[in-house]
Length: 365
Ligand SMILES: *Cc1c(COP(=O)(O)O)cnc(C)c1O
Image (tube, rainbow, N blue to C red):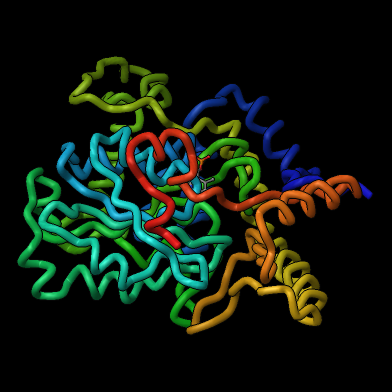
């Protein structure tokens, strides 16, 4: 038996789309990126979608756009992939870690308890593809008392006038909430990862969904952020190739995190088939559920509760009354049979960087 961990879905159509790009004479950001952005927009119902070269770089850019200083706090779950916290640190803010609930997702009560005058953003993580309680989180940030506490210290924070809600949707492309709405349309900003192991991939990539309230123009913001992802250069390389279009300016300190067309081509071919691929994920997920539901030692992962449905990214199995030693041995035994399983995730306070910064796992039972 050989069941590797999340091999990428590469069929003839993916190869054709990539070849088409390679032969087209234009391999970096251009028409394929634009087409992928449109497909993601259609799939998730976001007002605008901007593709970049990773979730991590996209999150750093959005938090830099928000304008964080060292005293500014961003509430995140302690239980997530490290990028969620690293993005906050790179953008110059302070991550405030809180505990998760039994469904693996950030606790709304813990968020409420952690909000201070310095809170500038909340990042939830749709663990395994199962959406967080975003309705409750959006309601929380617009409560009178929470609004009164808000203390903006950047122009963007001032325009927003409240705590920003960002969804780390690295796992949850295609997941739904409230019955039929899709992740990507539920919070101010949602970021998908298109990394090689995610549900849809561009090898490396990320997609930023914009749904900011009326005080912002999401179309104008899309253009600004696109420029920001290209060193704040007023004309991208594609536009400059046009006759007479050579003159440009650098208007600010941006980043260089644009997605290339050759990468977008992979995702473009995949996303067209995503409804079918998602059905297949669901079928496999249910097969595991059927098998494990017969075992009293198994705690099955959430996937379909409270009008929310997962994107079936990870099958996260918990085992009752198991020690870490037993768990590690079990992973070894399964590996010997040729099946790749792993621990999702090692909570951040248990990692050297965060532990040495003073985050303590005992606070996150
Ligand atoms: C994969 C992942 C990321 C990072 O995505 P990249 O595109 O690799 O930067 C962030 N958050 C979570 C929860 C992830 O699983």
